[in-house]
Every structure is written in structure tokens, then in C-alpha cells.
Length: 137
Image (cartoon, rainbow, N blue to C red; front, side, top):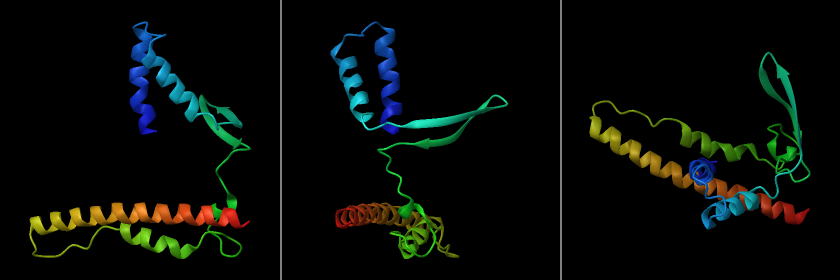
């Protein structure tokens, strides 16, 4: 999403100034088309009092898998214990009385660095687990 948001102004600028057949505009168009190659399906929308509401969506190439998304216990790929580390990372660090502002800032910076590393590790582990389980069954 961030990449798209950064490319939109440049793409529109190229079109505005008439560079429709420029190599840069063609390269950006190829990037957009390639990134949207697997975007398929249908979306149902409802119009209510001037608002557009998504009522449903489906796609044969959807990445959504209900057996992973459920938080219910039982037949699920998702292990609820996996969220424990994430919850611990997202809570604010405990404050220490009398340490001064510098110590609090240092603690916050250390917590942010640890959070980034642990979040990246958790994402990698989840992706590895999903890939492994999809090859099994």
C-alpha cells in the first residue's frame, strides 16, 4: 500500500504532462499490472444513505483461509499460544519511578528495537509454518 501511494503522484504527473508513451510511465504501468495479476473475484456492495458498504467478497485466488483465521479451539492450524509473545511486545514498557527521562527514552528505544525484531521473527515463523503445513496436506 505504501508503494502504491508513493507511485500514484508520479504516475498522474506523467499522464498530466503528456508523457503517456514514455518509458517511465510504461514501466510503472507494467509494475501495476504485474502486481494486480492475481487480483480476481467479485465484490458485493450495498448503497445505503449515500455510503458504499462492502457486503461480501470472494475469489478463487483468495489468501484468506478460515482454518487459520479462527480463534476457536479445536480443529485449527492457529495455536493461540503463538499470540502470547505478540501481546507482550505490544504492551507499553513498565515505567520506573525516579529513573529520569533519559532512562525512560533509552528503555523505549530498546523496546522498539526488540519489538521490530520479534515481529519480523514472528511473521517469518508463521509464514514458514503455513508453507510447511500446506505441503503436508
